[in-house]
Length: 620
Image (cartoon, rainbow, N blue to C red; front, side):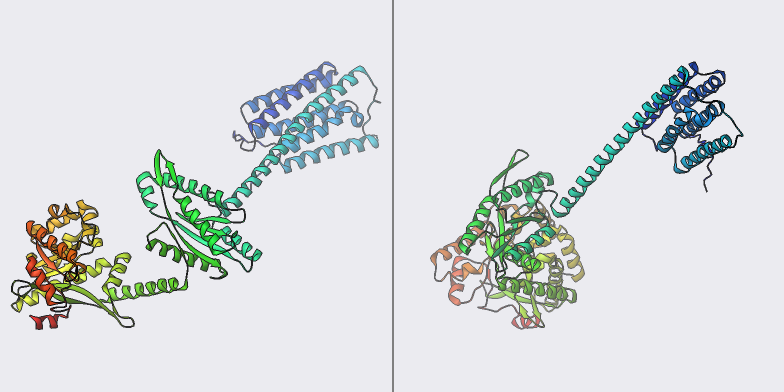
């Protein structure tokens, strides 16, 4: 437990409890007391002058202590010095009738300002005890004092005491006012901080729009005002916003969002609610419309607004938006469910080409649910390898013999039944499962090709490669490992890829194709003519075959233009030293036309659909 004495004899220079202004004020009080003491010496008798001279020396020492910033020791010394001075002067002069008793309240005021509670009580108790003892001693005749007489010296002493008290109290009052003013300013600052915290809790810090929680409250208030509606909840998502952050930085993206939010807010009425949900997503609650045509007009104006040009970092930026629309209470009254439904409609707008809006209808939610369920079942199927690989033969059109096989992934779900590849393959790419599926097909196809070779059938094997497998960057290592594990020669393997693969990140794709071509792996362009055709890649990449899309082959009997396109593709491939494979041959007339055009190979239902390995062996 900390001990304490009559003085705070602290040898440290810690003044953490005192500000610079308070320390300066204390020095001023010491100098006022010192000046008053020196003035009192001039009008006092010998005994009083000796006491006052001693006190003056003490006050000078206290001033030195304050200069050395030994504040606690100096304060204790000052208060006791003044108290003992008053006690001494009262004792040798007029006792209880002495004017110096008026100095006690001043000393107690100093103590209240600059000392702790315990020190103040100790000092007050000492003064009270002294005055009580002096009064009782006078009352019972133990001590006698002269009758007070008014003189020039007493007049001067009184004025000195009043001047010292007045100046000191003025300084104390000024400090008190300063403290009260600072407290008022601090309270106002705290209040402003609380209001700002409340505002930040309800608003988006970037755009200043209301946040999700406040938007929900505003929606319920609007719904309570118009229980029968109609209210429109719009879910707005900016199209292709990420490239702005990638090219110009997130600061530029934030500036675009602030400018767009300001423009949209200006277009809204006072009763509408615009909220930023996060990222580049906004929710707008429209209340001032009477019929669907008027609402549609407001939405189209909003789409046009989102297409405005913004200038950021001396760059011109133009955006578009996709909007999903739900209505309350027609589509429900639960805020979160309406946001979910509007979000679903917004994604439908993106699928339809972006820069448009789409009304929500219940079929969309079912589609989303079906997609989610299919995604979950796909994950289980990949984990448990519930897939099979079917093989469609490729025929040489010169002698009508089987030249190779294309490996095609098949999935039959226990509940859903057969799931078409054009349904689950894009979903696998979207979820990142295509890497595992691609590896599975490659392993199965290469292993099957080795089995056919051991049976005496030298067939090439074609495997489709997804663009996501190329983006991974490790395709050469994966293929080489599979070839090593299965023992298949690289020359037997042909990897089929679409034209879009060659357009995206050419450097990375070309590097991987060159590595695999050096091993002997061959490459074919699948669905040639239907993608982003750029004939320049035919000379830039190491290719061996072009596969003519079935959409062209199916119409060559009826459409001379399609026949001309097929002939052109075959001639182009021949001039570049590439083989051609026609897909989707279903009748003899189409076969004859392809043979006349000089097509190398073909596949289709005319011969066989994709079959199991055992059925393929029967075909062989």
